[in-house]
Length: 238
Image 1 (cartoon, helix red, strand yellow):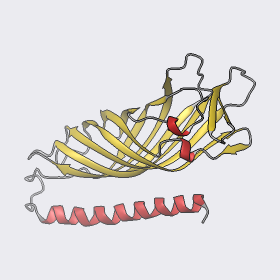
Image 2 (cartoon, one colour; image 1 turned 135 degrees about the vertical axis):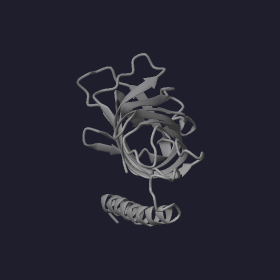
Image 3 (cartoon, one colour; image 1 turned 90 degrees about the vertical axis):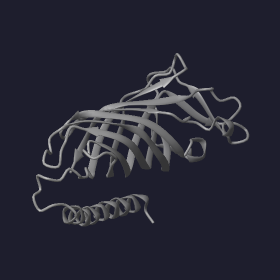
């Protein structure tokens, strides 16, 4: 099955499932409270989120150059679990998808054992090597907001850890596509923080786990580690 079709199918299924579940939950919550809606304090902030970020690549290699713009797009669904009577503190458990593109001045070749061998390329005329990663994400967060059961525009601070499973990974330079899925860690974790007012929120994220599987690369490969730092915006839609 074509991967793009599979991705579209997964996205559609997630969206339909969320919409159906949200409608059911909304009915259950309002059936459990008093008829006067201004009297109850228990509520949930189940949300759809959309985010776009620029990525800075932190590395220990002085001559590393992020050629062009590295970027990250994410979307998903968050289930809200209030942990105090006011509803202003909660835990969030999400499910979403992420799309990352890293531009680098790395060259990839193989050694005599056909293991990946990465070196730095200082020639600016050579096309950059970029990594394209698509992942399923499980964001977990501790959430504070200044909202109430009747106030839908509020300040928020959300922070936590997102776990990723990279189900599609590839590297490309010019028209050459490299099979690199076994050379990168397919499971990862990222610390994230978002804060802002109403729909518009700033988003920061820092990868906690290694990028390359150094033990599976050539012994002659450059001992480089990339740490993506994401800065952008995230939008929460009720």
